[in-house]
Each structure stands twice: as structure tokens, then as C-alpha cells.
Figure (spheres, rainbow, N blue to C red):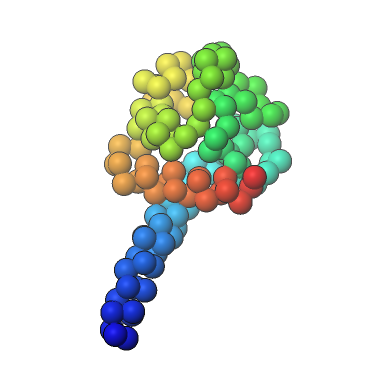
Length: 128
């Protein structure tokens, strides 16, 4: 009976461990983003908008950031940053938002995008 309990406990912790690993890898991915973006609430004045609590927020709506017309249009269209919309945007920023200032560099690997989004979800949860 004890062995079954140990195996069940281990099986139940696997998803949490995998999520923690994704968040850690995503934090490493964010190093590239941190050249232009911050995740610290209220830290503004960078080249890109602040990404604290980005998940669940409307695109182009971060305070104290001068958005390009394309992001103003996304905001007016009601686009919300979810894991799905971030995934599409991060894969090909220019296809998602033609003319945006972030440029053509996307994250081609699905796993890398998933890790970065897991990190941004964790950051968003702590900054609400």
C-alpha cells in the first residue's frame, strides 16, 4: 500500500515540476526580451511596454507607453493577450501586427514560446 501512495504522490507532482521547469526556461528566454521590456510593475520608459500582468490585458493598453497605430488598432479591436494570442504574436510579430515596431524577429521553436508564455503567466499572476 505504501508503494502505491508514493507512486501516486510522485505522479501528482510531475505536472507541477514540469510547469516549474517551463517557467525557469521561460525566465531564461525573457533575457532576450528584457533589452526592451520590463516585468517590474511601474518600470516604464523602455523601448517596449511593461509586461507585468500582461496576460489577460488588452493589447496596446499598457499605461505610459506610446503605442504604434497597429497596437492602437488591436486595442480598439478588443484583442486580449492570452496564451494563444501571445503564441501567435511571438511566432511571427509582423504577421500578427503588420508594421509593429518590434520587428520581424519571432521565436520559431514552439517549446521556447511555451516556456516564455509560462513565465509571463507566472509573472502576471504575481503582479495582479
